[in-house]
Image 1 (tube, rainbow, N blue to C red):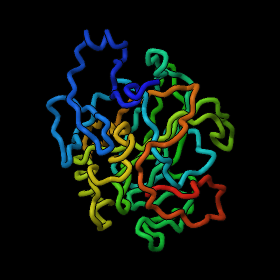
Image 2 (image 1 turned 30 degrees about the horizontal axis):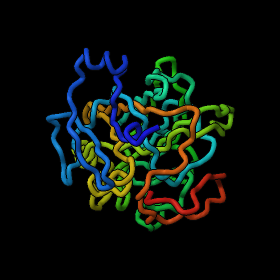
Image 3 (image 1 turned 90 degrees about the vertical axis):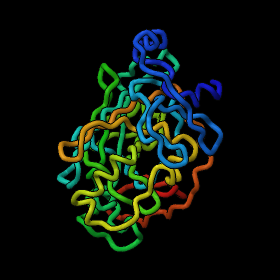
Image 4 (image 1 turned 180 degrees about the vertical axis):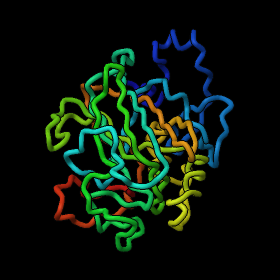
Length: 301
């Protein structure tokens, strides 16, 4: 596998490279990231500060996605379900994630397991009642529940996994994001998803203009603080986070839809996360009520 395979964004279309060219999915221009890799965005798309595109590249194109440092606040045994909200308030968000087998002409990959977890509108993660987003006491609802805004779906015959959730809230020094990992070979039991080979670990991001619109609405507007734009997010800026930029449609009043194609190699587990992600976060306080899988020294949550 060459470096170009790892950094080339969405080079094969749904029907293969030749079919994509015939269908005319559009040309790409490249933005240079701080680590020297080239990250394409659709030509003519607006760009934010520091060369960060404010629109996502075409979500229906496939490359081998680069893993990033795993996010904290993971719990073993993700519930097997599509709707992960559990009544949490927020702007409705539907995730449509398609998994493709990159080494095999980006064919759709059925039977892969896609796991997501993220904070609620107040910045709280389920299962971690003491982990306030700003270091203070928990607020904005019970974070002690182990399962809200967590779930796992197995991709269907079209390689698709869908989730019904809400837009994630604000956390200190981070742009809004959703933690995600794609695995193969795990087990699905009454206690949730277990085991398997983790083929990709990533974080899903949103163009800044959608975040601005969401955070102006209740309940997000009730939490004060400075929003971190993509250009300043440590994970997005360094080592592969841009492979998680969602293509977003819809509106804050009717609900948003986030789409992304994830290219993996189902025979391999990444040997290391992307280089350069600063490890500036604090390890969450122990939670005796949950059997959690936590990184010993996680990046900023």
